[in-house]
Length: 297
Figure (cartoon, helix red, strand yellow):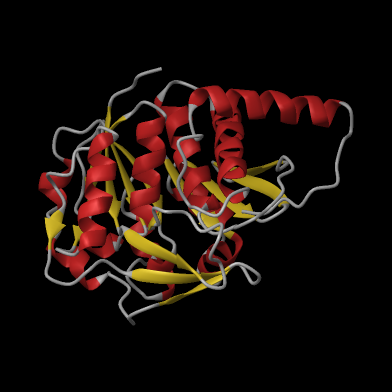
């Protein structure tokens, strides 16, 4: 299922868990761009990651891990400060910044033009779109604006001046955008897919002003944080390997289901074999009307 090359731009982070000792993962890799890049590499895409690492031990460990996956880090930068660390509170499915450092300032040093040159596709994972130039025709663009919306680093104008293959939003982000312009209207301005996830509620797909919904398969949730990154990566991998959007959404939902059922935000189980197995199990469950689990991402 090998496809072309994709550049991923955004933050890599180090995750810590509050009140978790015995079951905490040994490697706390996280951050939207780090998560997406790792998932896409597991799904056999050729990945280039442009992010900001520090010179601390955690950064060195993270870079070795990503390099072992075949991810090209030459577009990433090195800075003196460590990457952001977040403390995850499992009971509330929330997080806070450990050092009052969210990492956005460091992304100013990333050379967008150089990082994306010669790639077939580009994924902006929580990357400030105000800094993004126009792109040549034929280069497929994806975006998950995430916190850049609430911080004012990405605006409606930023989202409408580029031609996206897909834009990924959770319900909160979609509601924030819709105070300025309905998603259905945005989907008429930009002819790509606008995809909204909302926990256990069906995934919403907007395209050319129309809306369809796609039920979320059941998952026993351990940690919902990171599920959205896995979903977006799965959808992108599906589209980049020739799947139609309906099937790509199912791939994304399966990838998200794998991640939310564990503590860590990354997993080697986000691969084609395990995704296909999970999709098959979900389809069987739907056919037999099985239910009873939480469904969150």
